[in-house]
Image (cartoon, rainbow over all chains, first blue to last red; front, side, top):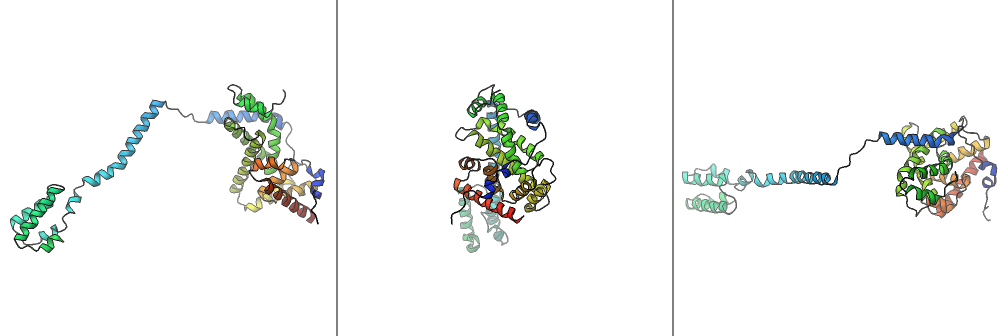
Length: 144
Length: 182
């Protein structure tokens, strides 16, 4: 059974007439009201001062410098902090509790003060270990 | 003053010093078509007036960017449709009644609406249309009342012709069933 091309609804032309209406003169006055509203909205918009190109460039550079400083400052702090040196000598607290001679204590002090970074510290540490070993200090405690 | 062709309107809005004149011509040419399209979606006259103004303001701001690869009137219809649907969504959000009851409430208010002049069967038809899903309502109104072709509707609604035909067919069946019940 083939389907009807046009249903009863589609055939009834009276139903297609517009049942809605508008106030008298609505369309005649619409354009005037619209333009009034556009003028009011544009007047109410806060004007944004457009920066000239050189100003924009200066502000962009300044902003980039600030961002760079904020990002690198924490990194710089981590690299230059004193606490990092002390952690190189986990055995210091153990050594300090031992009954050591003045020479030993002097070496400990050198190690604890972190006299120099990098290779010099290793040299001092090596010398300290050798000296303590010569004086029969338990090396296991030093080298843990 | 003779009505401008769409081509003249488009040329006018991109010509310095002629934008306002061209826009005025556009408003005169399309205000009624767009108003009735919007009115069938939002039903209430005051709401339709708000949405129509919003639509033309959006058109005024977007005209410089209008590309001639789509037809002017389908572009205008698309803006009007989107504004009307956004308006309904906002209205539903502001109400405390559940969404599915909003259309029922609007349908009930039609009877006492001073800007509704239909007879009993036309009232029942509008109430039946209001019960359709949103997209189906749009398709039905555009085809049944506005007599739009499917390819024009496809441009406005960004849907395939096949989907639109199916949607319209279902809408007609549902409305007939609802009218038969009464």
